[in-house]
Image 1 (tube, rainbow, N blue to C red):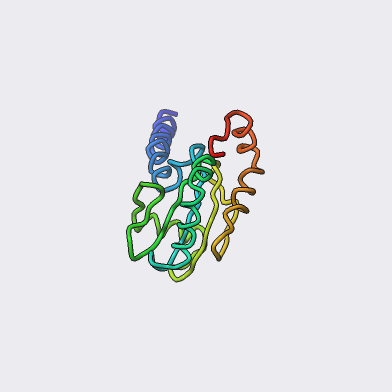
Image 2 (cartoon, rainbow, N blue to C red; image 1 turned 90 degrees about the vertical axis):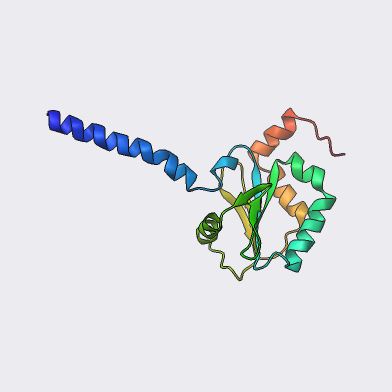
Length: 152
């Protein structure tokens, strides 16, 4: 009986110490329930598709921020980041594997506040369609009802 109790305590302590490690292994966990993410995977940071998307986002910066969106740019030939936070090459590779994006591919993935992918595209998205998709999400509907849009 005493041996079983010790074994149980040992297993519980191992499980408890592994919980933070598992959370640290998800590079998107820090954004869950705080931000929506627009992750852009590019072969090179000089990719014209990324430049085109960034130019569009500069024109709708207020609307982008109003939807609690952060831009993530993941590439091998420059530091990857989400918003102002750097992403390690390990976490970049982890995200590429998770979403099935090779290093030579271009992909844009919309991640909801719940941490789940909502859309995955292989071309530059029309930002109004992304905004429309977000605006139809139940959590966004609540946000719009509870706060005024200061972008107009």
